[in-house]
Length: 338
Image 1 (cartoon, rainbow, N blue to C red):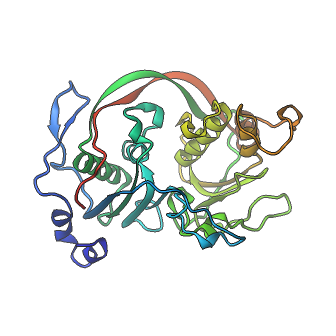
Image 2 (cartoon, one colour):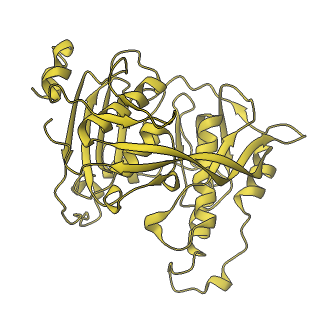
Image 3 (cartoon, helix red, strand yellow):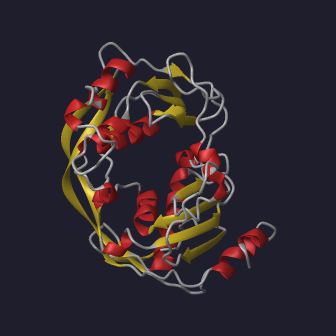
């Protein structure tokens, strides 16, 4: 039975689309005891997981980027789910097991210790999410899927990490309360290369102009970034990526966002702009070439730490904290039947 067919008969889909009686054991963090996963844990109403055959990316030819699909270009996309404009269905394409694990358990790649195939093999995941599922329930569904389809088994270990605590400065935040009423799309993924690469209009300051009623972001390749309808947890995640750009060692394949914890106690959603150029920071990374100019001749640029404090009225305070690390003991490449 296909995912589309399941829309009309949701109650029977999970049993038909998963292998019956798949009992998988997961090492829990409590005393290392083994407990069955799937008993009382939320599950997708239907799910299809496909292992993608390795193939070279088909880059778009000519001026029209829509001539090639995101799937053909091998660009990872994670669309849909709770908090997006399509809460009842997800479509993940060209995603690695590492990315699925990060989404399912809310951790970063440096908190996962496992085989190289976690970042080499690619998959496509389509699933129907039960109506009204929360983000926490959605993560539990992804966890259950990883255990049942990939036979994921692991244990947790606490290790010391550099962590940045996001706090409000003494002068208070410089954020505008948002009027956003539409959730937007997860990670701002778009349905086509043309939509994804299209740049919105800019205001007189060179900042992208976005609708104020729909969550979204634009910029990232210029000197100004615009954000609409972002919660503080989403702001923290975005800053984590920016710190990752500034501190990376030159290997684009292992870019790891920093660990940023939201300690602002600011509720709701906010609109703001950042005068910050990520690409100029990336151009400073050893081993990465952008154009023919010398890195020493590049104009000075403020670090994200200074930008956040001066422009947002927030502050990133560094500390050392214990975080959980997933030590993978078993994981299979082939997800099996769909």
